[in-house]
Image (cartoon, rainbow, N blue to C red; front, side):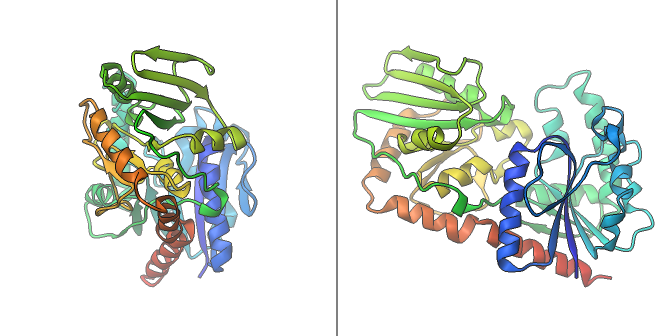
Length: 374
């Protein structure tokens, strides 16, 4: 059996590229029969990945409406028994092009509930037509694929419902290459100042940056709170704001030693806080996985499919617009800081439960089940 894991990119490779690199490493280590393809995209594809820059204007706005034809035109994909395709979306003038006259099995991999995400920033003159096209074409695509994967149970069930038929479906959450992430640990809470870290690569509404900042703006307790904001923010890198007991440092994008220093200086890491804006209760957020791989306690505003049960290092807050209860975070910081060897426990959890090796074995088993339906 030969399997192709295909990613169609119409932009940069930064975030997706890191994930693919981790998948490639895990697949090689396990000796799984999976090749990785990146179609289009800007920048260098990770080592060990097949690249294809489909003729010139693939990245143009017009050609983005013919993504399925671009995929169907690639001769190299025809030799595989199973294609695992990161769902390219239904914004396409010929969405079934890849699914016609094929001999291989095709399954789509979904990272969100597409229609709710399109309108998450508001129902506008731009978002509503896109959502309508996704609603119609997405159902057409899913009615013709051989299988589908959701990164959460919720997404899997949403896509299965859209397919309007019995289809082979599985939940396989996002993973992380734990070995490539420094085990930075965390600073124990001293009772006087709580050090928080928040990473957001964009202003996407589901990150909940505004919710975190609004919560800190209302806090006026006796304990100081310091937030390191890493990534995209409205404030320029190097900006510091101070209001009462709260200090916020805006760092912009950090890498390498500078990023490690931010992590090692924090007590709690804060993950996504507003996934309800995407119509989601469940998630498998990549930054949550990085926090765990680094050995840090974390705060999440959603139900993570890999962080369930009574985990001593994970605090779940409501998935809504309510202000965070800072006293609850202070109590959580005190409890986690009092536990011996907690950072080693957290890192061990990442190795055993979140590493890409576990996830890619699941993908390989899923592909095998698809191939058996021929």
